[in-house]
Amino acid sequence: MSTKAYAAHSATTPLAPYTLTRREPLPTDVEIDILYCGVCHSDLHSARSEWGPSTYPLVPGHEILGLVTRVGDKVTKFKVGDTAAVGCLVDSCRTCSSCAADLEQFCLGGPVFSYGGPDKHSGGQTQGGYSEKIVCDEAFTLKVPTNLDPAAAAPLLCAGITTYSPLRKWGAGPGKKVGIVGLGGLGHMGVKFAHAMGARVVLFTTSQGKVEDGLKLGADEVVISKDPAAMAKHAGSFDLILDTVSADHDFNAYLALLKLDASMVLVGAPPAPQSVSAFSLILPRRNLSGSLIGGIAETQEMLDYCGSKNITCDIEIIPIQAINEAYERMLKSDVKYRFVIDMASLKG
Ligand code: NAP
Ligand code: ZN
Ligand code: ZN
Image 1 (cartoon, helix red, strand yellow):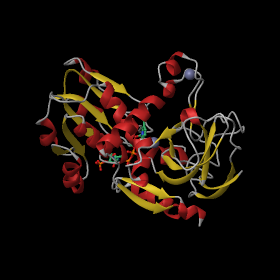
Image 2 (cartoon, rainbow, N blue to C red):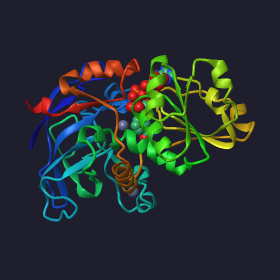
Image 3 (tube, rainbow, N blue to C red):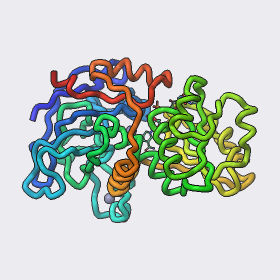
């Protein structure tokens, strides 16, 4: 089925209109009319081949929320008219040890990402949510609590799960001091979740203008990371630091703030390697780790948690025609705090 979209056609040209073909729904497929799609910094990294060469045309977008328009005859979880969502994953092998452990993002056969992955049904590559419609197996389609505003819920599908999962795994909660580095799409959800989980939250930002917002979003304290004296006050005091920064920065400055045996977890994915001094880890014994989105079951758990606590993202709605300008603003750290595309602008 012919579907209007916006695609990157090369690493150096602006995104532009494109028409892609979606498969007709198979027996276990859900067809979704996309209402909103969040704009993740990973979309920009991928559109511009910053993590390695992308295949073009590439339709980004993995924070996808819409209404079910058709279901295959074996679908049990969804019916026409339901609100449904698709995040970063659309398939996996479903049999390996990672899949069996609900960690499809680490599928040993290779997780199939929502864009730029191998499309085993249609050939070629998967294409993401900057489009009118998507067709996805119901096993990788999420239910969205009906009390949440749909536009503000869309970014939960990546920014939400990517911060929720490591905060849970590394035990953010009462009595724990948790640092969130960077107040962008991921960072603002990291602050909200760590606060909701009961931790003491310290936000590290490079942007003086975000201090007030950081406090409103749930931080107990905001530190300007460019100020060495302000950083030094927190030396050796954190149980966990979650780093969401998208560009080059000094990991050692944050490792110095960890307690014995505490962890700094990277979710931000700067394209270039960053350097780490061995002494940042050995004295006192510290951990540097990483985390990738979350599995489907945990993504549903996160959505249900947001439903029960009324947590959504702080968003700025844009028409698809403003996507290139949005990317430029994202590069200037000028996002409050997630762009969400109103897909009606594509259909009109
Ligand atoms: P974003 O909205 O652009 O936020 C990134 C934030 O990092 C900025 O707002 C800024 O915060 C800070 N920052 C930017 N450049 C910086 C620099 N040179 N030095 C220090 N701080 C800087 O991006 P996002 O969508 O949240 O994504 C963040 C990163 O996570 C990207 O690399 C993305 O690809 C990655 N990601 C990873 C996963 C995963 O599963 N691991 C999932 C999604 C995204 P301040 O203004 O507060 O300093
Ligand atoms: Zn993302
Ligand atoms: Zn697998």
